[in-house]
Image 1 (cartoon, protein in one colour):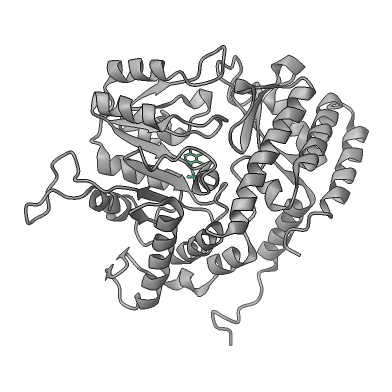
Image 2: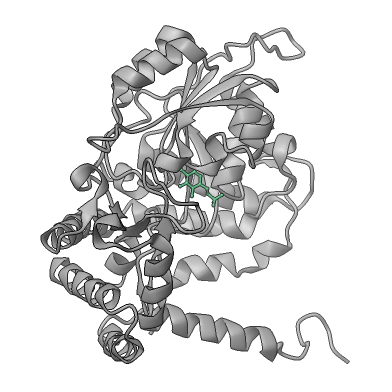
Length: 429
Ligand SMILES: *Cc1c(COP(=O)(O)O)cnc(C)c1O
């Protein structure tokens, strides 16, 4: 007789997982949105908590047996509040996209105007793309970077906001290497009567340790993923430093104006999600605990230092970085000066076990399937223990691969060298 706990091992799936682990361990991972979590984060994510239904919030659930998961979720909430100096957080969003959708549901009516960072300049799909709910159910408008500098001009953001009158002004991006002026953005939001949302999905880990400007002080609402520089399990969350009465006059049954936190909680559940993933929330709690440590400060400092070293190495070899450099963990490289496309770079680098993603550059003349750019980040390789000199070595390899993109035997040689080199940076020993 077999029970659920004694079924035959599914070798098909686990063989594939082993293959994927080998891929991760033997190559150079430069996708800016990826990272490697600790064994204890994975242990929590793979725990018995996956069995539990817990709709609602700690202490206010629609199911019995939630005494333990209540403590786990509360721990995650308390730790993220401490990490960012927030007074309120909801750790249930299944992803960054879910967190943003919950905010839209809480703050907007269908057809309302939103103003976000241009997707083709490095913004995110969930900030108004026509193929995303944010662009289908709301009226998306955009600001971008300047062609000459590659940097956002806040005077233009202000002009655009005054013209479009958004209900929600969104800052944050997936491929912007510069820090944000939240003070100025808040002034613009106040001027047009908009709420200001910062989506810090990418740089959250650096912001948490004080290495970039603090959005929580100035933005009404902050969303983030938990799996990029924050180095937790795949997921999202919403937080605020200061709660406030919702500006839409939505009242409780008793007649009090509902707090924004209450609208946001409802935006997550029952607005856009059902039962929370308590196993992932436990993994978030573990990751937030790690992020509170001094070791994580050292990690975040190294991520930034590595990005600086990598940017310099690229520039030294004649590559063109949008905006000329980076303040965070990533950079966007315009490959046109090298006569290459993003598609060619991505497809060639993978042959040498270097993983990057092709990316549109601002004012790109190529399609999203081809692109003129590539995006690289240092969060993952810094987790593996790499330092500045290793970043220079990576750029040497990238350059060697790209300059030999039609030389298969050279690509094979580089791949072998890289597989050997990566043994010096063990991941899950
Ligand atoms: C990655 C990212 C998201 C989406 O996160 P998912 O977990 O993939 O849904 C949202 N916003 C920004 C700015 C991002 O970079």
